[in-house]
Each structure stands twice: as C-alpha cells, then as structure tokens.
Length: 193
Image 1 (spheres, rainbow, N blue to C red):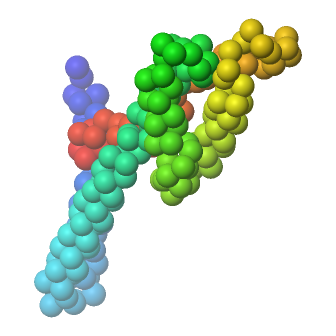
Image 2: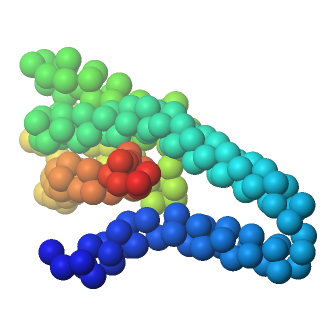
C-alpha cells in the first residue's frame, strides 16, 4: 500500500480527531497572537469539559437505545411467533388437535399488536410499525372470526381467508427487514472508532 493511501486512510478514519487538533492548534496560535496567553489554561479546561460532555451524551444515547432494544425485541419476537404459528396452522382454524397452537397464537398476538402489545407498539416504534401492526390486526380479526373451518364458508370467504394467510406468510420473511432500524445496533465498534 502506498504512503499516500495510508495517510488518506488514516485521515478518513480519524478525521474528527484531526479536525479538532487543528482547531486547538490554530486557537492557541491565535491567543498568542492576541497576547492573551493567560487564557490558554481556560481554553484547555473548556475543551476538556466539552469532550467529557460529548462522551456522556454518547454513552447515554447508547444506553437508552439498549434499554429500548430489550422491549422492542420482545414485541418483534411475539410478532414473529404469531406469524409463524399462522403459517404452520394455515390460519386460525379451530379444531381439536391445534387448541394449544391457537392459545399460543392468541398470546403472541396480545404480546405484539393487540391488547397490551398494541400500546407498547405505539410507544416504542414509529408509524411504519404501527401501520403494519394495524394490517396484521385486521388479518388476525378476520381469521379469528372466520376460524370455524373452511368447509362451511363461501368461496369469497375462503379466498379472503387465504389472502390473509398469504399476507401473514409473506410478512414472516419481511419482519427482520422491517424491524431492522429498531432492533439492529450496527457495527458498534466501528462507530466508536
């Protein structure tokens, strides 16, 4: 690797530090030029206070994101569990053999986009997730209402049933992408360097 490439790479990686170093040197030279050298210790104390304040801000910001992450991941997992159960059962068809799965699906729904989960979603996520969960709630309501079995339903109801199941099964693959801005921290080490 050439020397210029290494220097450019160093400057790119440490541009903020280099910029602040240049500002400090120019400020000190300016204070000497004004014959105000007695202000240099005050300048360093102010700079140290600013650096400590910025560090506290970054730490608090990351701590807040981490605290929210625990709550957001819980809702994400419940939504993913609900969608997976719907795909496994092919809807909310109430038969004797899947009563436990129906109870698990209902609990997952109330943990993410219905009941208490509905209120958590409004306080922890943006409007995009709230809108997504409204659509998911509509699909859940239809499947729950018409879950007696497909043999007693009209062709229109059967088609609507499979539209909702198809929507939910498509959502299983999309949920990690949709929730990424809320539950992914990114390359944490690279952000701090």
